[in-house]
Image 1 (cartoon, rainbow, N blue to C red):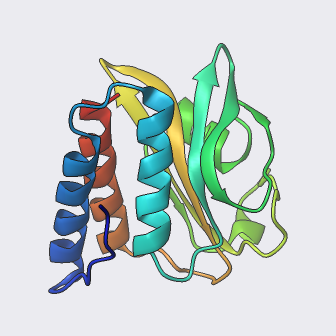
Image 2: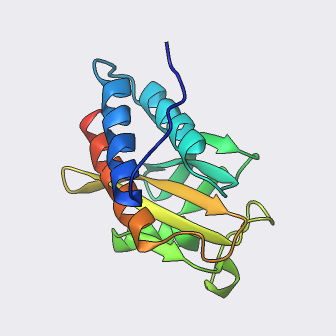
Length: 159
């Protein structure tokens, strides 16, 4: 039913293909956990040089671990703490070139060197974050940020 595809073209074109693939994969499915799970699997298959990809979902004033791929992770993160909690408080994407330079970084995996966190904002409210870690310093480019923000917009249609 599902096959791995080769992504071709510029990075922007590859991310566009990825978002279209996500939309097709999630169409007609309404279960949030199923959709987040498939989104993590798709990103894990697409992205290179990452060691963790997943979601944290907002429950009251803390983020709670959701579907992910990678090593076991921190289960709860208070809003305003670490990269994920800071992204929620700021309601904006945060790209960290070197996690060791981020004040208050929460090290769930010692191998992580860089990170990108995109808040999931639906109807003006943050409902969670997409968190991606890499064992490489400065892994996430402007094209990654823009492509992943588009990916999240596509995902939010199905949540």
